[in-house]
Length: 166
Image (cartoon, rainbow, N blue to C red; front, side, top):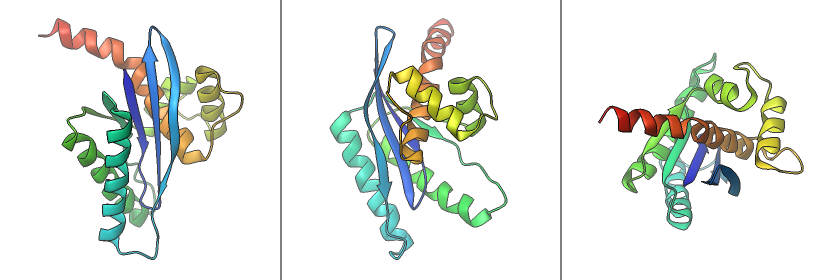
């Protein structure tokens, strides 16, 4: 199974693709999509959509996992992230890929065992769980890897529950 993890943002969207087979998880790709802050909002969202569409076409993920928008004190940032998140969900949905959303604390809990884990702790656990020599970077790509890991950790249980309730 290939999972596309997405850490949405208008200026920087982290992405990661992890392959899971036979109980082994292997990172396939990770990076950041950047949009030009000087461009119009519509152009930036269109660029983000096109880049995500290209990633989906290249890696053909089976499922997508997206970090939910966290609304903190900066409403403007939350609005921009919400727009980017909507574009990411749309790109996956248009490709027929099931989308699953996870809160930041759920991702931290799944990856590091603690819902308030520091970013460095999460990155260290991502590296350890994927057999990487060092913590992945940049931070947005590392967050996308964490989101994909979070999804994969619960995927087997989710499938079993779905099958049992059919």
